[in-house]
Image (cartoon, rainbow, N blue to C red; front, side, top):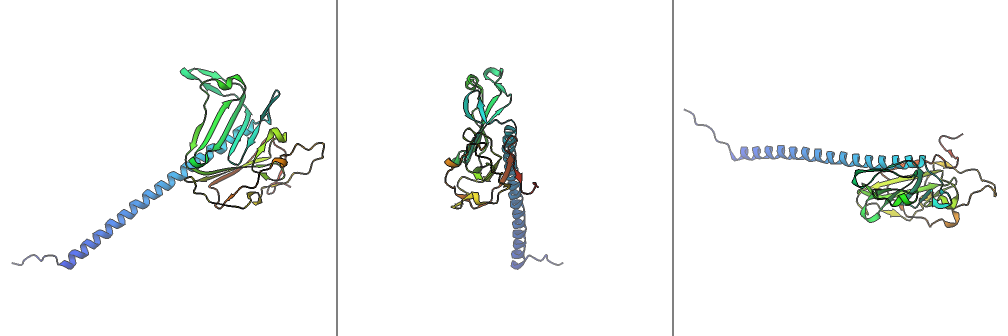
Length: 254
């Protein structure tokens, strides 16, 4: 009658090593799956945020006006490098307190801005038609994302890209507005001292206008060059202003 052979120390060590390798491989697989899931979730949130921002700016520009009209001095499009205000004519329903529905005036003002250190991208809409603008129930600001490291607007006036624009000063709308978004925690986007207006531009300059017909230019109030981010934006779109001056795109004009 033979006795059962016991495991040797070497066999036990080999078995432990094999189990450790299997557990390590399983852990690496689960970690990779979790990382991929987080990356997909982050990309989805970024795409959604950029899509909402671009679509809302485009829809407001579609009905944008150069000024408030009626003797008002409001700017139809006024913006800096990190904030944009658009005055448009459209009808919005106001959900007032108590669940009642009110109808505001057709003059609406929408503001898109980045709060800088907080990393928040905010959008506010209000009735700009007068007394109704102070009615309760009109939203103040809506948080679109809290994962935006940098937001940059640039304005093409037919000759060059500007860091700020005011249609009340120029007397007309810009040709196009560039919207660039860098995603990430606040302060994660480094910058250089280069002038971002030296980047490749997507439009040919407009033909010079006669002195009598030329609008009041914004050149006298042009700000100093801003620091240009070293990294490329996560999402960027150049939005043509429907009622802006006519221009010719390099890749589409003749």
